[in-house]
Image 1 (cartoon, rainbow, N blue to C red):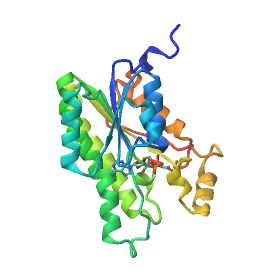
Image 2: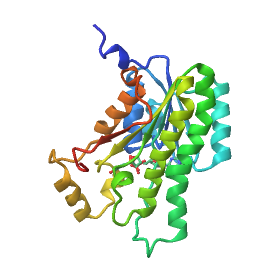
Image 3: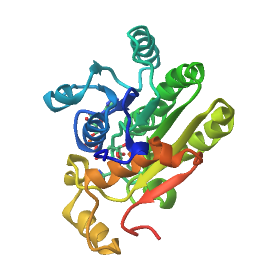
Image 4: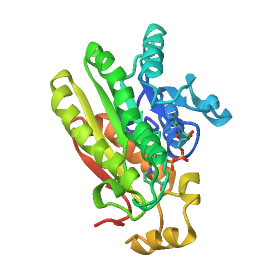
Length: 245
Ligand SMILES: NC(=O)c1ccc[n+]([C@@H]2O[C@H](COP(=O)([O-])OP(=O)(O)OC[C@H]3O[C@@H](n4cnc5c(N)ncnc54)[C@H](O)[C@@H]3O)[C@@H](O)[C@H]2O)c1
């Protein structure tokens, strides 16, 4: 009797995960590694926790187009072309729009949206060459509903959805799927940084009376990356305890 259902067996697969040093990305890295994948973790700072589970780590900013393409080529040369890509790296720089500075707009769009483009741009030709692959983007319900103080973040995550849907149309015939997981608030360091009343409101909105753990999101990412989701592409899967219904 296998320990995990066959479709959740990632043995022999290579998974690139951005923002894998902590939070949701680290949790995805641990779970995919436990399911047999060779994990490549990309982050601006590689943590010891990531090093402990990854087959390869790279210190790179996803927002740097040239650096990402170079890293991807080097990985392919090492036999680490991806069959799974998880676009997870993300940042917030919150302010109401009339106080939002250009630098904070650019930073959020550069990491969350351009970073998603940069890595997908690098991975898709390798996936096509291999005959298929799965891309999972970590979005947010705030990209669907908007959020006070987060016009930059909401725009980046809404952009990610449009991007994924367009790419799904382009790459489906090559056996490549791309989907988005849209979490509500998740108990990570990113959420710990938001004001107490914002966390309390998220908890109130949750129909299940709790916030998500990183594992709740990682399980949905794994599902979309797995054979169980082999007929799903261009979709947005909300994992939010009903926070945005
Ligand atoms: N925590 C939440 O409540 C929540 C809710 C919805 C969506 N999300 C999304 O989930 C994803 C992960 O969030 P988290 O809570 O784990 O965040 P986190 O801040 O705990 O971790 C993010 C990781 O991304 C890395 N990173 C930041 N900029 C990078 C860059 N330019 N290049 C490479 N790596 C970079 C960071 O170093 C960090 O390791 C993000 O895309 C976030 O927007 C989080």
